[in-house]
Length: 304
Image (cartoon, rainbow, N blue to C red; front, side):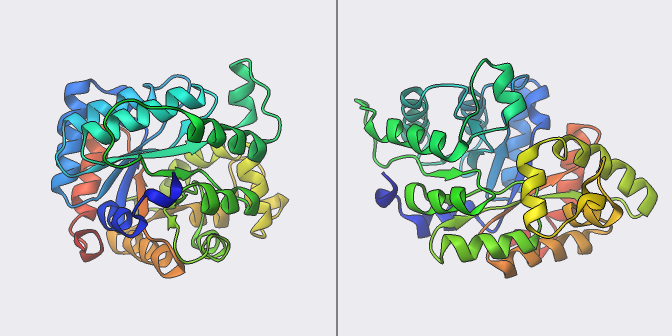
């Protein structure tokens, strides 16, 4: 499958900057369609939506968003391999790809042990589990018309999963990372695969307030071993990783300040080798998130 996707065309369609959000899952389908249409009109190339046990299901959620847009790509960030079997994932991705002119991107991930265990699965060895899942997807039969297969990106942080993303998918979608990680990921992936890191952003100029909001975000992810181990590999130590993170770590993971500072961080990822950066605005409501996106969309980085 991976050899039949035009990766250069995929990069072009994704655009240099996209939007990552879990907030829309809380909204009505009508609100979501309107929000996605606005994100499209603002010039963002791709809208990424997450999937957790309490959110909308990834593929049906993507269909809602695809139905409200014309050119915007919709990507899952990520669809967990533990939420459905490989054949169901392959057929769902193919259905959306054919129905919506190749605008669906399947972001796949192994999730995290605490979340997987609550579903009754054995987390085991994540890289082996992903490899087996991809084997199952590749072996699935699909009878419907399919002009092109669905592109897939793997949620990859460490070298082994990044190598799998390069060999068995169209690239990687790292989450909760820094530009330093982006540079390392590009080196492992090589020049051709898609590299699409997530970057959390906050339009707040007061340092105390910004870090307070930032820590509400980082505290959730610093409870997950996958993220902590990745940050250790990047050189962060116990003092940085304790609790919700040191000031330095929060500032590295959540860029806050004026729009120019946010855009500077996006450029840092692009300069480090990213093809596409999906920004995740921290906001109290979906309406506020859209307001922040309207402000950031005025940058030439977004428009290009």
